Image (cartoon, rainbow over all chains, first blue to last red; front, top):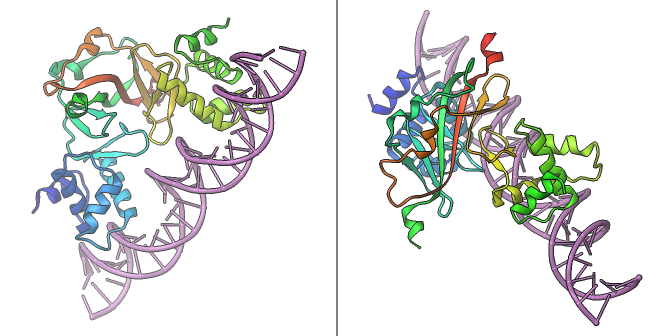
Length: 137
Length: 137
DNA sequence: TGAAAAATCTGTAATAATTACAAATTTGCA
DNA sequence: TGCAAATTTGTAATTATTACAGATTTTTCA
């Protein structure tokens, strides 16, 4: 079975053709794509793929914890097949999103002064600025 | 001059009646309100206030760095008059947003393994989970 | 002071992302 | 094979946000 199909099963999701294709896309494109990009690219091989299916599927995946839904972009959601603990950087010039690895591995153990009683289940660190390419100009 | 008007001048923004009212609202409501909430509340005293003005003004403030625009909520932007360095928590149950103060004050000095060449100008830490109230239930 | 110019505000219409929903298709299984 | 359940599809509705042009307010300066 494909890696993508296995991944879906791990998270209790039945692997339909469309679901496997979308998960496959996410595992092979580290670009943090939008619904639009995924739909457009996959449509080349799956002409009948509906945008609604892409929306529904990504929501399903994200709610199951199989992928990450990122709100680092102001107007649209970006998706990430890599669910390991890492931060994200968005270049305010070109819009590209990069994975960032904090060198201080204690960042995920940060406590909060007023954190008593809170149950934290998700943590996202968003960085913005200029990427190396845009920074040179 | 009011504290709000002074604040605007600090950031090079001309203090009109509407702008002062909106900044005032943000400085006095720590609820991280949406455009909708701000407009609705201020409309009680300023019947003619347009929602477009609220949108434009908040964008102006945020771009000048006078306030923060938060994307912690999936479908709408929330605003924060407190620009000091702190994190945000959103309760997935009731939707309320809380300020969080990392007890490890080094969190803003985190380096990134693959950070060479990047110029980081903004940093947002978003936490999600259950607030003390919802956690009890 | 008082007109002309500039800045700001307002209301409506347009846009774009996302969701609702019902019909069509596919899948799993007796 | 044939039926029921799950999934997908396409269109219509919803919601947040922006575009834009006209109205209003503020500023400039003779």
